[in-house]
Image (cartoon, rainbow, N blue to C red; front, side, top):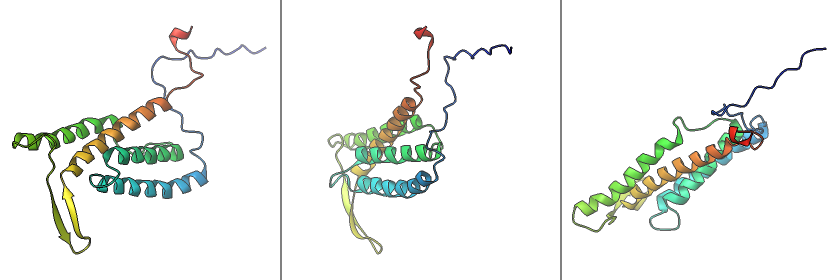
Length: 165
């Protein structure tokens, strides 16, 4: 008779996350490349036109989170080089500074400035400081959304913790 092997006790620390079960699927990987590009383009369009039409930093950030999660499911790795939590302070600082500058100049908080620029490539289009605020919101939403999603992805319902015993 061979001796029975003991199963190692689960650790309370963070385990290395296993790749998603679909990360080896060649069809998903191929389709996700095109879908990632289209969703990111749509997110940039929503971000660009957000101060004048439906859209803005919040919904563009959610679209980007969806695209980045699709990439992670398809490839098993993150498309970002840095942890998503590092985006949040930059986004919040950019949004606050955008509102603070007009206030320091004697105007209402978050007062937007705008104007028109004409280029040979695009013709005339409006610029506004509200876009800078939206970029701050965008960075905050992408950082927090990806952080939440990654933490939820690490939860293993079959895993046990010390308090369960």
